[in-house]
Every structure is written in C-alpha cells, then in structure tokens.
Image (cartoon, rainbow over all chains, first blue to last red; front, side, top):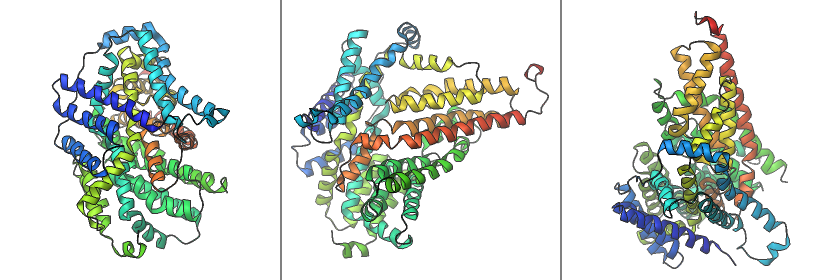
Length: 316
Length: 238
C-alpha cells in the first residue's frame, strides 16, 4: 500500500537536494533550514515527539535570527525567456496542467472504479499521493521536452523556494499551533463564551458568528490561516458540526473563505494590501483596501449563505 | 480534558493575544507562532517538556501540508522557458478592450490559473505593476480621456484588488494548497477525516460569487469614470 510515508520520502529527497545546493552556494543558514526539514520528512516518523519538538525549535531559531537568504541560481535572461515563450507558445502550460489533471482524474478513477478495492493507496490519502505522482510525471515530461541542464529543475525550484523562505513552513506551523490550542482547551474557552452569546438553537446565527469570527480574527492577525484553528475549535467543530450536525467539509472550506474576505480588509496582510500600494506608488497606503471593501462585504455575506445552505439545508 | 477545570482557566487565551501582538510588531511569524504555542501550553498547566512534545508531534503529524512545495521545480523549470511571458502574452491579447473588460478577463484568468495550481502566474511585482495596472490605466484613458489623479489611483488600486480577489477565490479550488490541507489537518485532529477534494469543490460557489461581485464592481468603476468626465479633455476622446 502506498502511504504518506512514500510522499514524505519524495519531499525529503527534494529538500535534501535543496539543502546540498545551498551548501555548495555557501548559504549555510538555508542549508541548515532545508536540511532539517528534509530530516523531518525522512525521520520524523521514527523520532520521539520531543526530538521532533527540538527540531521545530531549531527551524524557528534559524528563521528567527535571519539565517535564511534569497538565492540567485543561474537561469535564463528575460530576453531569452521572451524568445522561448514565443517559440514554445501555449504548450508551456501543458506540463503545469499535468499535475492537477493527474491528481483529480486519478482520484476519480480510483474512487469510482473497482481500483479502490485493491487498496493501492492509504485511505483518503490518494489525492495528495497522486499529486506527488503528477509532479514526477510533469518533471519527466518537461525534462524530455525541454532538455534543460540536469540540475536546472532543482536550481529553479530552489530559486522559488528561497524567495518564499521561512514562510514555506508557516501553514504547517500554524496547524501545529492549532493542535496545541486544542490540547490547552482554547477552543472550549472561546466556544463557551460564544455559546453564551449565541441564542441556543439558532443555526443561522451560529453560522453568522462563526463567519464573523473568521473575518475579524483574520483582520486582527492579518492571516486567515492563523484564525482558522481558533474559530474551528471554538465554534466550527463543537457547535456547527457536533451540536447542529452540519457538513464538516462545507464548514471548513467556506469558513476559511470567510476569513479570506477579512484578508481583503486588513493592512496587516501587508503582502497583498500594502506592498502593491507601494509598488504602484499610490498616495493612499490603504488605496487597495478601499477598492476591496465593496467586494469583501457582499462576498462575506455570500459565504454565510453558502455555509447555511450547503452545510445544513442541503445536508440534512 | 477536564471541562470543569478549563472553564475556569482563561489564561491560555493569552496565547492568542501574543499572536496578535507579535504579528502587529512584525516579529518573525514563525517565532510568534511557536512562542504563542509554548505560552499557551505552559499557561494551561503543562510542563515545558510536555509542550515541546505536543508541538513536535503536531508539527510531525502535519508534514503533508509542506509536501506541496515539490511542485516548485516544475513551475520554476517552465518559468525558465518563458511561462510568465506566455501568460503575459495571453493577457496582452486583449489589448484594446475597455478597462472594465480587461480587468474582468484578468479576474477570470487569475481565478482559473490559481484553481489549476499556477498561483504564481500573477502577483503584484510580477504582473500587476508591469502589466495589468498600466494596461488598465491606458484602457481607461482611451475611453474616458485623461484621468484626474484621484481616478487614476482608483484604477491602479482596482487592478491590484483584482489580482487579490482572483487569487484568494481561485486558489482554494486547487486541492494541493496549504489552506485546504490546513483545514484537513485541523478537522482531522478533532476526529473528522476529510479529503482535499471534498474541501476544494466547496470553494467553487464562493469563486463564482467573487467573479460576479467583483466583475460587477470593476464595470461599475468604469461606468463612474465615464460619468465624471467633465474636464475639457482631448477631442478624440469625446
């Protein structure tokens, strides 16, 4: 049976290569950071929880003290890229499309044919495993078609990875924070307060409070990822899923999108709202946010309706 | 967990306060998150070793969220051969359209490419500043004559807003993205196993609403610009 463990070995190999290339480049902080992450993928299953915790602290220490630098591996110039794009045309999109097509078509094929009885993939893990398969196929196809230098995909990947930097593990870290919040009972505390504020038995008002909480926490923290574990633990799971029997997939997916409406409204989300104002040399630092208000508010209302209809009316 | 006990102890909430303060003061977010996790665990009455263990276990259990970066070599390699220039060529193909039409097409293009996992095709430094904003401005001036400073800023800001809306309400249709896997991880830790595809299809209704609402607003701005054209502009624009 193919499990996540296989995927972790694949990812571990990628990060190990990035660590080695960083080392060759003299970027020791990057090498240590990506090397530790490779170690987590290779060995995490066999390490003790405490050892994994120490690994997390080491990753954070490297990132927190500015150990990660951008890198500039050799690549093509803008002129060369312009000429190549004219020559290769829309076929350039094909390898990129291989990845989602493999994963989605593969998942459907696996689940709706007798293939699923073979137990080839670990249950409910097939999509992400097939995503890994898609990446490998796309890489092979692109290599055969474009015939770049052998190290080009690794170096181009490193260029992008180093431009993302420590933010690459922020979502994983926030999920871990969510788990610690759950352990400490943060959800129960906020949920208890919310439960006393929401009239009992009103599903619609509970949906409103959940979606509002997602948007407000996102506005405060600048990031829907940070808001999600808190609001899911406080209202989404105990009230909407457990007490009122809502569809967890809708509550999770659309709850996150209600948070994204908050991202449109906050200067805390600097990358999206403040940086472009600077890039476009706007006089009003909040000019982009001002153009987003009129979209974010009605869209947030749509999300409330979608959760209410999709998770409750259509579900029961 | 003992419910009666946690109901009286509000101290773990300090962890959320720390996240807010840390983000506001622009500390490194990884440090803020781990600091908040340690503080929350300690305030809930666990000892330091137990909190580090909990953090390590949770980080390890959620490794699949970071697996998605293995797509970077594919995207990077295609960029080496001009993927971004080709995307730009597609957008430039609609040159000559009105600002409303141009930004509506960009909105749809950004949503669809993000939904297919190519979320780095747009973006403010790569696409909005060099391409989308100047084209929107030129199209607006072509239809409405020279723009006042205030209206010019609105058109530029709307271009950036369109990129954000297109990205946010397209990317979650792609299943192998951090936010979808984060939702999966959180629900799984509470005993609700979901699949990424189950979650990502539920991003579609919101994506459609976003296209309609934001598309309407782009075109409303275009119509407003037509109304305010009172200044003696160029004759050819009349």
